[in-house]
Length: 524
Image (cartoon, rainbow, N blue to C red; front, top):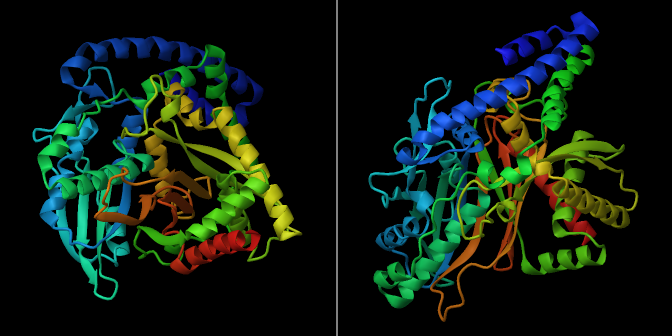
């Protein structure tokens, strides 16, 4: 009741003036007190039945599942393999069936339970009736032409109530008679509820490890014997409770912020999306354009990565800082018709792996939705001297990223989610219906940099080797304009430029990608 009154009153703040501001503040305080009591009562009702049903989803996880119903919260990764021996599909299935034996979360489905006095149903993880069932089949498309199949995967949601919440598609094997190599492609797709970007990469690593072990031993039983099961962990909200629990005064200030922001927007007007205000969405020009998430796979060879890392060390910045600098410059250049003439502030976000912050801490071996986006704004300068000014900017990016993480910027959304009685999934859904922005949010691009990884243990023979990975999340309904998903596996850097067909054309996406890589090439 209080939040409804607060919402209604905030719509008329410009008309009722200072009295309204005081009223909003008082109602906010009362609402927070009321919410606290109501929340404790709800938690007690729910906890009584929690152990009898399954592991309850946290507030963040429930929102992720809600977003899945709106076409989001869907992650895919492509694993490219090369080998001197063929890869039979029945062997792939046998190896895939080992993964749920290691990761309990792969055996889960989502059950909804109606709770008296609670608007939305309670959601819980419960084990499937056939917990080791694997959704796998072979597609007729050839291994090297995987992009269209990848994009189709990000358009196909899961039936969360039935499970499984992950699936794998294998493309038709190809053989290069000249080189004597077999090429295979596997598409791993998961509900974000059980796997973030790091989890998908770990899934590929485990698969390749089991596959090579099976090939070398020629016996699946030895794999089973060595597998230790990773139990289902508490929700991210519970694991980060020590970071997101706020005192009452901070809750009050956090609750007042969106109210006064709305008041400001009513007076001066809400700012337009920086990108779509300059380059209108494709769907606005052609309403028949299909909404889909698309990918431009790019790679950096080992020598280029070594040179970049060397330059970063010389200029006292991180490789991640250099990536943010290059992408920010590319975005600012595009928004100024191809030439960066004046300084410009770019809103962006980057992905933060929260595993080490959890209590208890979560290892890198574990799957789950354990990453958060950190949003901030970067002021892009005009580069007079490309080399000198770029590295100064990269230093600044490195410093701001470290500051944002140190100050808990990636916890901000979780704090709002737990403090404010707002249906954020509904807000994202409403954003997806905005034709002028095509569902684009404030951040113009996102960077998910998973760092350096080595696939496979040090065994004598690796019959199957990774020749590349690319990953993306569904963002065609709501999200940034571009995604930049980066990972270095066995010394090879894979960079996935992610764009959305209803927002920009492939030509515009290629322009962005070319600007990023041109900048990195010039400064190294």
